[in-house]
Image 1 (cartoon, helix red, strand yellow):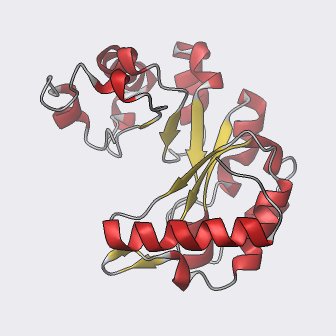
Image 2 (image 1 turned 90 degrees about the vertical axis):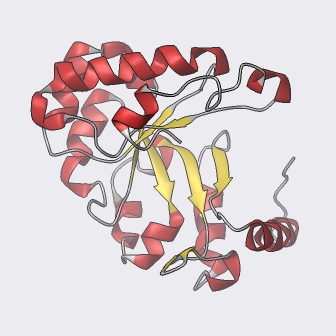
Length: 204
């Protein structure tokens, strides 16, 4: 989670221990929420490049990015065309991706589908965007936004929505149960496993 530009640029071995690859985990990175878009695409590209150097030893498979204003993604990709295969734009409370969808598809960018944001902010319409499910590369799954953080899956208004989504994505996505309380995470993982069994979907 690289959520703050300055703080994450200052990370050292205490924050990114050298033995992390030995855990035999797969990694992706959430890019900072305060990238310097106001300073132009070159400044954003420089920050991302610096962060990439810090986490290169983890071999991340992609980067989650909160949507910038229309046109800014095009500027970034002019500076760093190689990022096109790595960037996954997340639907947030401030942007459901519809305003930048044409730009995203023209640039070949992926989607981080946050199911909690989708149900919390009534963003179901994004699932009708042309080619939407073909672009989903990662799923953030939890019940809904709450004052305490991300609520457990027992708060998901309709589990059939999750089933609908999982039936339509490509099948090679990363699925993240994005719950930050260990007790709720364990309970939600149990619920998810039971749903997948009920729906006849394999998991590992």
